[in-house]
Image 1 (cartoon, rainbow, N blue to C red):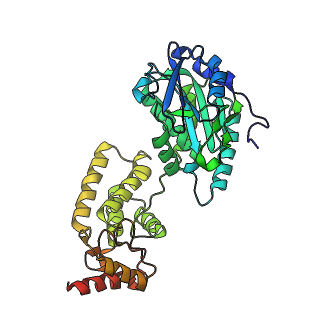
Image 2: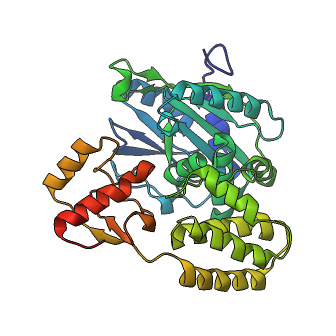
Image 3: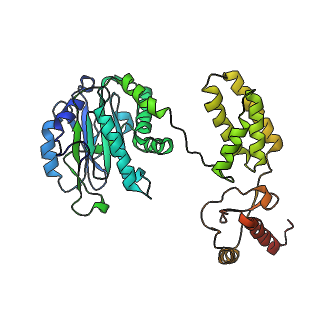
Length: 388
């Protein structure tokens, strides 16, 4: 059942409202069709709504997309539009796709989306013009009271994605992959024929429309109220998250901010983290706990960077030396130690495991319980006649 409407809304009035924006006068709507978006046609924005019924009928057995932003120029059939074809930014959008959900529990992700969508649709000053159920997610469209420049539009898009996902990493990933100016969104009234939905596909339908334009600055402010509270879900190699958090709590005590930098850096390096990870954590702490609170200016930050480089240069463990293992060694290690993964990318391994020597390329250690990692590396080195 639709989250916002018991019965589907046609939505052509809302599309007409979006594309009839005075700023888009003389531009073109791009309609794209095909199993993949490979064939584009262009219609003047002033009358393209009158063509939609014919397009939907003619291409009823394939996917149909509509460019979210009108194009200032057209390209010869069947060429698709490009980012630089868009010169006017009076529409904002968010593409919520099921590929962005947690594969372990996609149903929970959909429930979270539905809660957020219902709240967004009720907002008096910032409600989207359209919410489209695509069969595998949702598309949200906002019509702005006035066009904005490209930089402001990018900022607006980024904050809208973060606000909708309520998760920094997921929101940023979706923003980077689906906010380009030439973005095409599924045409309401068409069918989503992704292979996983079977030969009948799934209907693409409007479940909310609201013929009101939104002040871009009001919309940006509302999105930032949520987005600014989000933080990256940083993962640090060679340490449990709880260990790092404990170090941050212990190291970030009241007092001199520069003394705190020295304390944090030293404890993280002593805990076994490499120079890159230590620097990233300290910089993140400095920005969120010092700069954002108004306790440091550019000169303080420059001084902090010099102190950080100096500390890491003096106290960071030496770089790990990579070695390769043979296929026979890999197979033997996997038989002897089932917790060991020898596929996938190499990760950093604590210096304590083998005095600065780590397995290279095809050998990845998942943990060091019972000094298993040290024993394994020692075994590989012993077979090569290399002293530990």
